Length: 538
Ligand SMILES: *Cc1c(COP(=O)(O)O)cnc(C)c1O
Image (cartoon, rainbow, N blue to C red; front, side):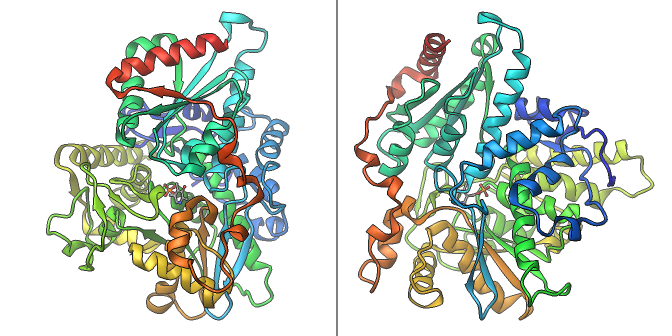
């Protein structure tokens, strides 16, 4: 690790690309070899970070952290500050991501990540990514006119939260069009309203008369299509984009300092972050914070019934489906969960319903780098070896549906992480328990409840009694009305009116704009719409 990064470069986890700039990594999204971009060096913190950073605001912290990953020659400091300011002044809380104490007795805190424009944690990253895209394009287009100007066409699929956060991050941005596909009528009314009531000319909602998987297939087909790629610069906003991970590192520091300012906190206080996890993006940012030097004792993974990560930490096998029925998963029965054709289960926490976690590949690279090489190897060789290992594992995932890692790898993974799996019924119980007794009146959303459930279990099982647990709260409860009703209907003091924010009231009745897309028209039908609507916009 270098203490100071004059020029931060990026490489692909599968070893096929090195020496990319931050801008290239962000605009490309995915590396050409199918791998994900990571920084060539994880920067370590300046020696006086703890005293110097302790009282900084969220924006100031973001600036200090981002500066370690983005060379000043790429984005001059004044510009970076401006991008950060524009990204976080849209949040409703002056702390941007406040930490509140949920359970004083057990030292459980909540890091509230839902104060952005769409009321979910993805805003923290997508507000920043939208401004970054615009900044790069404006710079590339300086002095150019008309057809000469570079234009970015963002294409994505959503089953709910990502779509609205992406639309709010990109609405009204110059030289960028955004197309978000969702399964028509299959997302919650409030999520649909959040997306389709945005009237900016560069926002295009495509409602597909199929499933989320159909939408995702269309996106993949477009990215693989030479024809549209020869005329349009396509970009992705899903959680594999490096800038999204980077943006999420800030709140681990921000929350740590909040705890550190409490009188009872000492340098011996262990801090454990508990993260409701789907694609492994949110918790991976915590891993970067830890690797940089933030004293995090453990990162605790909390999954729902889609538990590939939990099974990995139990068994060292990463596989789409467990081989021995449910044994490898810890033996608890799976209650009342429906299985998709693809193997994904529908749960009360849909943003975590995944088969494989795309960002896990980034952790695998660091595990291989640490375990399989020695310091006497040249650094270029160590990196290449790590890339080879990752490529081998990911190839096996594709061809055999899974792979097993060596004991040394799983042991290394267990040093930094532990994991819990939480069922739908425990999720509902937790919402109820918090509301009625732990912090009377506080309403959790189902994703956040999974984190709190895991934190409660962790206080009983793994952690020392003094440990401080911070559970990440990833969405506002009003976004998941059904689960919240199921948990709290009839409880004294509960009313939907108090849960629902003013901004949501009447949203479903506002004017909506979307294009209905027939699945039978195939991805070529989508291509025709994209080309036509971009043309009309320019
Ligand atoms: C996306 C999302 C998650 C999962 O985050 P990952 O980075 O995919 O692990 C959890 N909760 C909510 C509400 C989300 O939108």
